[in-house]
Amino acid sequence: MKTKILIGMVVMLLMIGVVTAATAPLSMVSGTVKDVTGTIKVNAPTIVICQHGNISNSQMVYTDTSGKYYAFFGSTLCSAGDKVYVVARSAKLMGQASGINKYNIGCRINTISLNVIVK
Image (cartoon, rainbow, N blue to C red; front, top):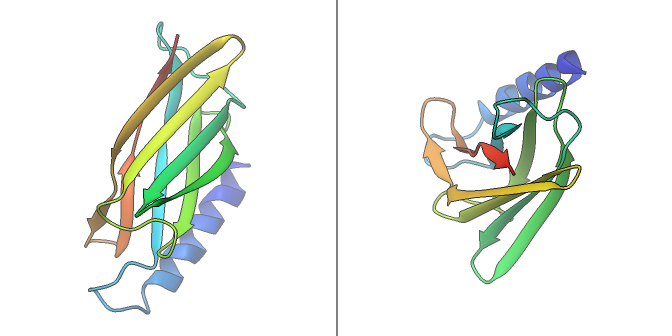
């Protein structure tokens, strides 16, 4: 599973390399889901929402064996400056986080990392 995710990320980063520095065709939202004791939550359903103008674009993803989740949006769905919300569940627990998507000039991609604590 980790290998598939890493290969996918490498392919996406290679594709991004052909665009100019002024544009970011992709946004990556990532983070870790844990409970209040710090225990990672594997296979936790996680909803990632990007507020792009007046439109909310969402994806349902699941955490991997390290408790990490990844969601990718094209630039027409999520851009730098957009508000991003994440809601995660694990059993009867739920947590949320939010932040602003940022342009990462080093890898020419919009990125935000939001860690969620479910309680």
